[in-house]
Amino acid sequence: MDRQRSSSEFLSSGGLGTIAADSVDWQEVRNHFVLRNDMIYMNSGTEGTMPRRVLERYSSYNWDWAKSPSYYFFDSRRLGVRDYQRANREAIGRFIGADWADICLTNNTTMGLAMALLGLPLEPGDEILTSDQEHWSLLSPLTLLEKRGINIVYVPIELPLKNGHSVIDAFRTKIRARTKVIAISHIAWSTGARLPIRRLCKLADKEGIITVIDGAHALGALSLDLSALQCDFYAASGHKWLNGPPGTGVLYIRDAAANPRRLVTILAENIPKIEEQSICTQLQVRGCNNTPGFAGMTDSAAFADDIGRDVIEHRILDLSGHVKQRVLEVWGAAALFSPDPASLNLCSGITSFVPSSDPAAACNRNFIDMVVNRLWSECRIYVRWVPIPKSVQSGDLRFGIRVSTNIFNTKCEIDRLIAETRKIALDLTTSGGDGAY
Image (cartoon, rainbow, N blue to C red; front, side, top):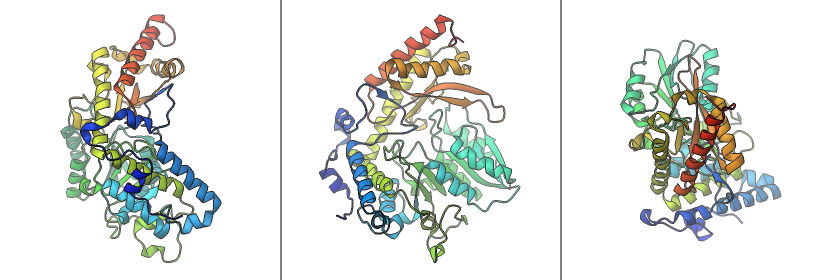
């Protein structure tokens, strides 16, 4: 049976019910997730996990698709596929503060960044500014453009980040006549530093520079309003902090109908009259879309809206602040790669640190790797290690443990993480084995 998915229907069929910010029962929230009870999962920066209701509906969408594939590809209101995924694009647009016509649903952040960067009318000798703390999803299309004669300039970001002014100043000094694009993360994937994107976009607008933002770690973790952000392109994932299905994401294109940046479609079907549609719709028409996933992502957005986007942001930052504070207490300021918890506007749900008061430990990948592996094998605590470049040009790396705390985590879990990490790190450094540094 077809339906229009609405927030009220979502709640009545098993959601949380509207919750006031000061009365959230976070154990109740945790009960909506199907994570194993014998583990602590702190890796939403790589992939989140669907709430039970979203998972059940996602499963039903896949069953519907399998029973009548073509109908659910072309006509189903239930899955929101009519008019080039319009219902799903409208739902996600409302969630991030954007018009549906400026939304293209993608498989992940990587796809969205490639669509934007590789579709711009750049010429050899043009210049793109980026930071020295970017993920491979952004670096990959930049590397391809560099092979085509585009000059890529890596702007250093201070570690740990202490204020947003330094970022703005660093980029301002690198702008030249042929600077055409600033491509940068909203939240740095390795350190969790939240960059001053709104001010950076304002600077770029003033200089006539295109902005392409990697929002992989913002969607679902921050209360976004892309129309106020004033970026030209914003790519994000639905499967991380939003806790949506795998293979889901979004690309926002400002004023897609006019397409002032003259983006061309690098991944689309050139069907008759498609060029009459907006650039977002053109990019949406690319064969068989992941419609069950897109429909599931809108349910994840409804779940988040039910709790409250501001409430979720506050909760994630509070948990992340607890991680940072415990790191400072146990190992000191030199151990923390992420911004200080007192600088809340620079923080996110990601915390990266080295479990040692000796800075040399950060240069020992084997030590960090062994700590992470033992946390999982001995304690069933899932985190990951990350490389943190001193500079892209030198290739020098430090290594840290990356902790991603989502709404289903607790401060008790964080305390256990720190206690077990301390125990394992101490054992490795005193045993004199391969983990010594």
